[in-house]
Image (tube, rainbow, N blue to C red; front, side):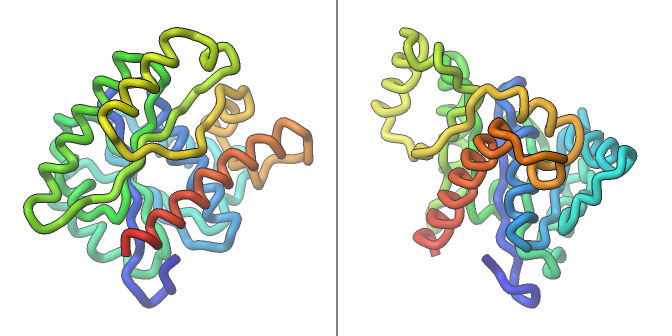
Length: 230
């Protein structure tokens, strides 16, 4: 990760389809990197402001959200300026929705890595493949923007369904970059998306520990991929 005086690393979490878990993934990663001592800025570009509501709710009920700041930016020019000027953070997480979003170009063009959460279903995969094509176009002739498709909301039942196997085969056939890790469908994740982080909730229960193991694996994979891309 970057040192405080160097340029912040930027990870964009993008999904063209609602319900893919984009904001939840952003929140979980913010908590994970902050718990490791990195100063994190979450940039909420989604007009629904789900990440902003999480931040306000967390503060309201008493969560410190140590090492995490959040700013809501919907103007494209302001987004570009924010991404260029946030040097005192080690990591910027940009939460963005939709390939048609006006902020999409800046959020991806400045990114060091793009996380694409997707549900394990064919229609979701189709949308993710369209987003990948847009990412490749935004890179232009001289840059390949690193990305990874992250399976999200995976249940034990999903893994045994034809829909899951078909979606996985579709991604494999397209030769896209996928995460080895994934996020399960967990009530613990749903609770965190309302307020707090996995590292500020009370108790060391098995569900909390299992949830942390998953988010830690995703964060570690991002760090590894960032390292190999540079």
